[in-house]
Image (tube, rainbow, N blue to C red):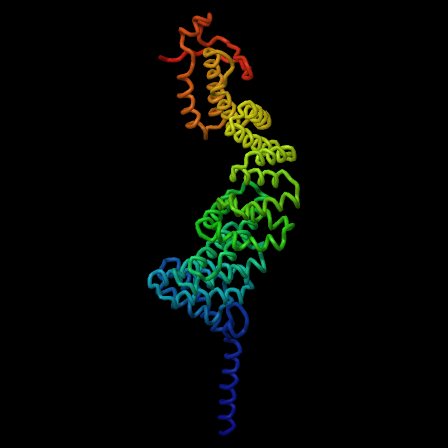
Length: 442
């Protein structure tokens, strides 16, 4: 009898051991669903969770999600994707910050089970930025995650994360979590990430939009004020006067910030010109001298920039600036000549045509009638300017209305045997242009 009882107990023990061996949770066996009954339960819970989730019944879905998360965490990436979305929704409804911590925990486990450190760190940054509100702690944590990815894996930054990096940095700056130099550093790196993609695919609308957004966020952050830029970079430029990359970066920041009249701009532009005699450096010095109303120096540097420049469109733009400078100084013939040269290099340059018209306006080439005929040529160029570049239409139309009132009258023309409107006429003097006769409308 004792032997029979012993065999029964032994059988029960072995059966229990067998069940324990065949019913293991995935979290224990390091397998997606586990084994035996636990495996069946995990599949069932995952199915129920997914069904309730798709029906947006999150209160029911979370009951089954917790079982899947605890017992078979490696069964599916959807556990984490849907879990993240579900707990974000719980937070939006309740504003209970415990749900933010749960979202971070979900992402940590997603990284652990699916080896996605970089993507999950970026998602943590997004979650903290989206849900953290005005909490400086969450903002700092968000910045830490995204900055860490930028340092370890900058190639991971697409148009979305580049924009996020700038936005997180600006938010942290507004909360006094970071200083202005870190915002400027974030701007430089975010723009670099976008520009590297645009180098390969210049017409990618996503990255073009990202570039615009990054620029807008940076400018609105307040970190790029002239005083901040001077404080951050003056000593660096004094210590590294020949660092071309640094000088170019500072000049770009100063131009974007409207600080081209600052002493730092003068110093950076001068050092760049000494280190690298280029069209770009000469052009920056020209603009600096225009801002300081040193027009002779500006003209000198514009001429040098034009001589060094090889790109026709860029050279045309530089010639247009020089023509504008000459027009401002009332050197009308020089303005006309530079503007004509600019248009010959780029026939889409409507501003060059506008300047030619303005240069001719008021030209003195003879008696009163001859001086009035000049306005036929002036209006010709203004019409051509607005047709070439519609963005200057309003400005051109305003001038056309003014200058058309300065045409000769029909009677004045009659005394010079000019009778037919629309007939060809040669305007003399330094203008020396062929035009069409038109009469002032009385």
